[in-house]
Length: 114
Length: 111
Image (tube, rainbow over all chains, first blue to last red; front, side, top):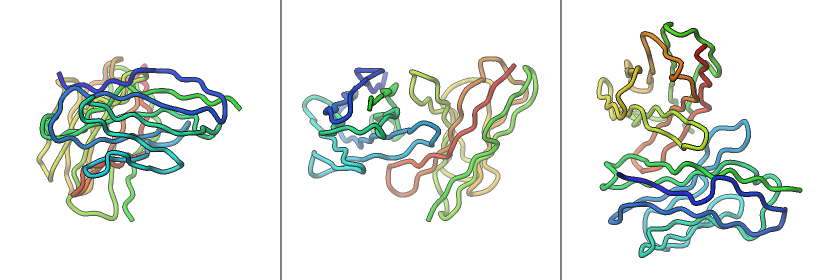
């Protein structure tokens, strides 16, 4: 079945620590990749996206993600997290082999300790 | 700019009662529209999507149905709610590009 795997469901970091959240998807071929974020009490927002071109994409608030086609991965990174990054993060994929629908991972809850 | 609205924000309904959740989009025409259910630790499950008026696809067999009476209006319904219908329901829209934009959601509790 089509799937998107996020490796950690809960991550706890101290402020200024570096962040990397893993995301792997099951089918190759042409894919569009997304990271969404849901801050406490807020709606789901697009953090960054990859369609084509440079596999290292930069999003809002200092986040970036790298598409590694050979590893079917799209990991999210931030060099130095802040308390305000506390949120739930979702990886999502769509493309022809996903029926052109957006398939989400289970989410990773990040808590940043101040 | 485009905005998406959902109401109500929260709803408590008894088992066996009907349901109607509404989603409207402003600032765009002919959007693709989606209903998702979000469960803790399980991500977002696509329930229905629509590429046009009266063009609705169901992803998961269940107690729910969807309708799109107008171009920018998407309604999620049930004739008789079950306890298992409790959850957080999200509406989303997309345009010519692939990213989807989400509404604020409705928290449904079936008692």
